[in-house]
Length: 181
Length: 181
Image 1 (cartoon, each protein chain N blue to C red):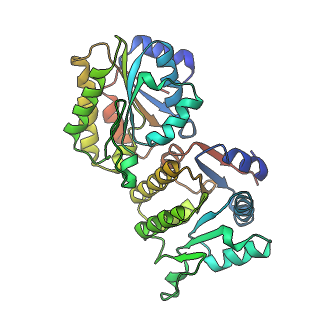
Image 2 (image 1 turned 45 degrees about the vertical axis):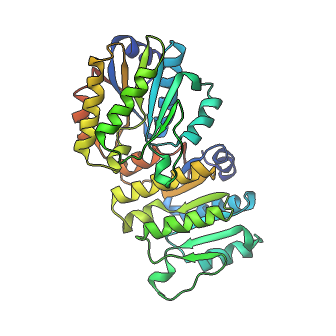
Image 3 (image 1 turned 90 degrees about the vertical axis):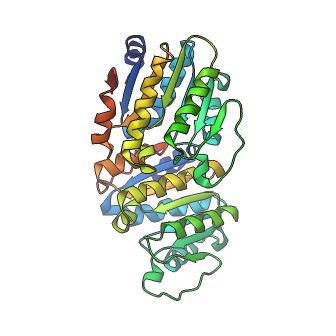
């Protein structure tokens, strides 16, 4: 996905899935975050793949403002580490109950300042390693429904081409305005 | 990318790297990569799924590498000799399916000052473990290494990972390299 395609998608779609080459998966997430920030968005990143400690370094390196992004970190607790939640960082286990995840996302989104808001999930495939597909599908459904309460919200799901979860991802993609590659 | 030196330099810039080696030269390339990484790093943790730890250690020492810089988590030897006792540089794990035991050994060795982690190899682990379990394990060890700031290098034989396994592993890594024959 080139930057023009991303800009066009952001302009035309509210809920979309980005399917990238596995080698470029994380770079695509970062590129999307940078573009959203350059357009004045503030948002929430649901990070299943990387712990906040690692993201923090990437944000600094890539000049992504941490003030304008709230992270829900689902990776750190895999390490049996209990970190204290901070204003912009919430730590959850990837096995957390779906309703609780949903409420946490909603709470974090409500805290965001400014009219332009986004919610981005770094990977739809990774949560499937920790819970049944139906539950991840339910979570994606809840997330898409958030637009009923936050009509300005942009929702972006990320996945990789050739993922083992292709069939499941097709079910999720039906709820999207668009799938971009 | 063809040059091992170049790959090693690039690896140092990433937290998690997947290196695909051609089957024809897998053993020699793998030895060179391990040798270079041990040379450049303080204490290298090698998870070996194909070769006994004793052999790895002997070969590296023959090449003039300080034994103190190497720790092998050996998943092979105990499948033949059940009563093998751990030594200062080798931790013997029951078999390549004992992922929890491997994970505990990694934790211990990281705490003891490991500075780089090499997994040799994904293909071999795939033979002994179900895909989903293996992906969870890889996600877990990459999260560990990101939190502890210890780079991880995953070795694989080129073209031998199924496309979906490759996609799922590559998306968890920062960099992916292929070494030409």
